Image 1 (tube, helix red, strand yellow):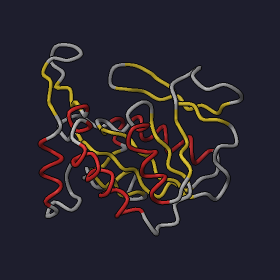
Image 2 (tube, helix red, strand yellow):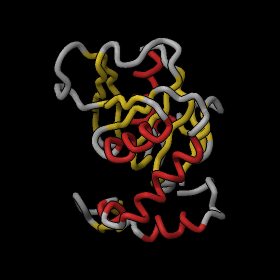
Image 3 (cartoon, helix red, strand yellow):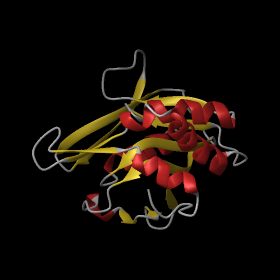
Length: 187
């Protein structure tokens, strides 16, 4: 949470609701636990409201949520701005024909999949996830949507981990993504 509306008093309240769990799921990891945010209805609503305030009226027709926590924040944002929700899932979780995008993580490889036809050429998309670390998963989500013909307007994340090294230099700073093409806005 930085660079976006730091003056808003809701930001501090949201930040205090995110629990940091040391050495989970393995030693050296400082896990950002959003379940404590979800347990507080006001903080959860404030989180959704901040995103809705930013994206309402931007002609976004697709909110694409990254599995699994993007599924928590994405649907209420989509409903509030009048957009459809498109789940971006791990491999073999969607029935029917899918389009996929492989990507490299700091600890290995992964893949995102989306139903063929879920996004139409020319649609304006917002990518939603709970956290950005290296940017690898967001890059894959953007690539997937763009291959389907969507215009990715922005990516929205609740938490950023600015201390982590960025994947292949694609994330140039906490506020600029993919060579100034896309601004990243964090709560």
